Length: 223
Image (cartoon, rainbow, N blue to C red; front, side, top):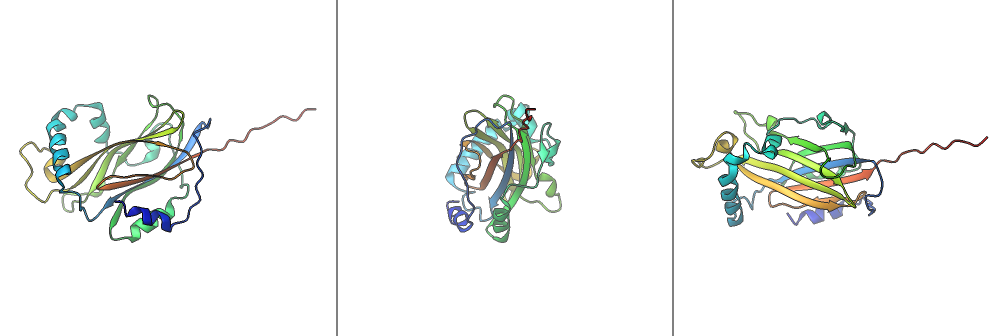
C-alpha cells in the first residue's frame, strides 16, 4: 500500500514532532482502512501466514488475547478510563479514503485516555463484525489497540482482519473461520505525540495520531 504516500502528501496538515513529555492524558484519533483490491491476499507470503495462523487457531481460542478480540464491543467509551471525543484533525484523511473506490474505511474513532505504561495501558476494543450478517457478509476487523507511555508513546495493534471466504473452508475451520479468511495483524510502533503515523500492512492500513492534553495550571495571587 505504498501508493498511500501520495494520498498523505495531497493533504497538507502541519504536524510537529515532539516526545511524549510529561502529559498525563492524550487525545488519540485512529483510522483503519482496507485495500479493496486485495492484490496481496493470495500471495505466497500470506499462504504461509495463514497456515501458521490456522495451526494455532484452536489453542488461541482459550488465550486471553483471543478472548479480547472476540468481544463484540464497538463503543470506545465503554473501556474504563476512556472518553469519546470528536477528533483531532484526521477527518480530511477519512473523507479522502471514503471517496476512493480503492479503499474502505473500517474504523474511524477518537478518544481521550491517560498516559500509562504498557502493563497498565488500556486496550481499546475494535470490532466491526456486527456490520456483517448471514445474508450479507462483509470484510471486518476485530481486536484491540493499545497506546502506552514510556520515553515515547507506543502503539500496539493486536487484531484479526477477515474477508468472506470464496473457496471451501479447510477441515480445521470452525465458527468465523469457516466463513471468512482471517489475517492476523500484530504490530508495535514507537510514535511521537502531535505527529501523524502510518502503520503499513499488505491488506490494512492504520493512521494514528496522539495529542497531549493541555492542562491549565492555576496560580494563586499573592496578597
